[in-house]
Image (tube, rainbow, N blue to C red; front, side):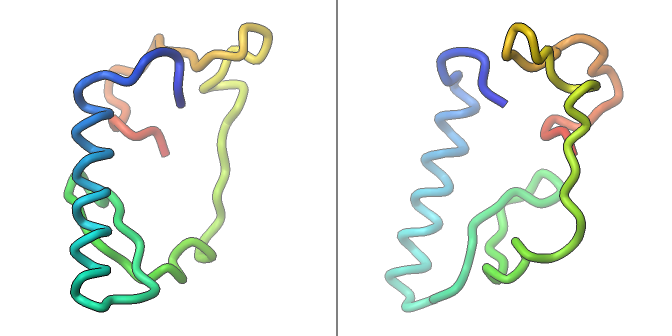
Length: 82
């Protein structure tokens, strides 16, 4: 979800992803994807992108008329929604 300019957390995650991807390339690793899993940086096989069902509850998470994410009622939900 994006609703404005990137904040410091967005920039930190992007930089860490870039560094991890570069390190994997320098190591000669192929077919890997950098990700956040349970709040931790990991690298996983690219094949994970085809596993499992991916569903987004548009009505619950987005204001489709304003083309923005709904940012209310996030108490108790994970930082990265679903």
